[in-house]
Amino acid sequence: MNRKIRQWFASAGALRRRLTTFGPYLGAGVKVTHIADDFSTATVEMRQHWFNTNYVGTHFGGSLYSMVDPLYMLLLMRRLGNDYIVWDKSASIEFVRPGKGTVTAHFDLTAVRLEEIRRKTEGGEKYLPEWDVEITDESGELVARVHKVLYVREKR
Image 1 (cartoon, rainbow, N blue to C red):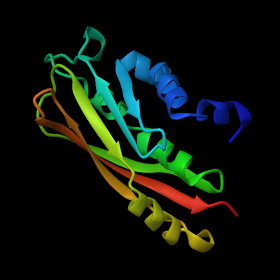
Image 2 (image 1 turned 180 degrees about the horizontal axis):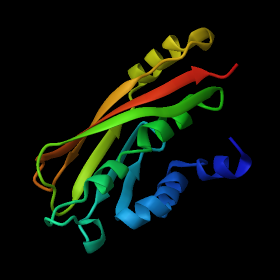
Image 3 (image 1 turned 60 degrees about the vertical axis):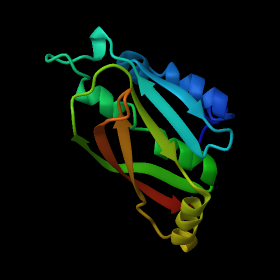
Image 4 (image 1 turned 90 degrees about the vertical axis):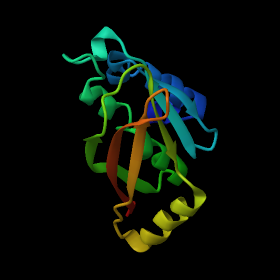
């Protein structure tokens, strides 16, 4: 990771501010409202605006996906450190109900999960951890579910 990028990841607050002003997030109206100091949890939200509303008056599906796209990769990169390669491998989204108003997604990278990833990548083996992220509306109703697969390997 180059020096400038490392500075962006220097603290949870710096990463949160950087992501909130990141072009795709800014353009979609996505706001990172929380990243834990140890990078174990994060929360993002997206309020409904004219620029992220589709033809039928609900949240645009691409914006719903974009709000969850980089978070697990970034949290995992930060928690594992520079000795690992972490990439997004694949993702899918299931739209459960129309989203209106403010929608929210929470991310949790537990110590148990982190240890599992370290154990599975010992000796340079690749590992493809998977997560499901739920996007909910203001009443807590499920709007969409995103399935994420990451690629993780120790650097050689």
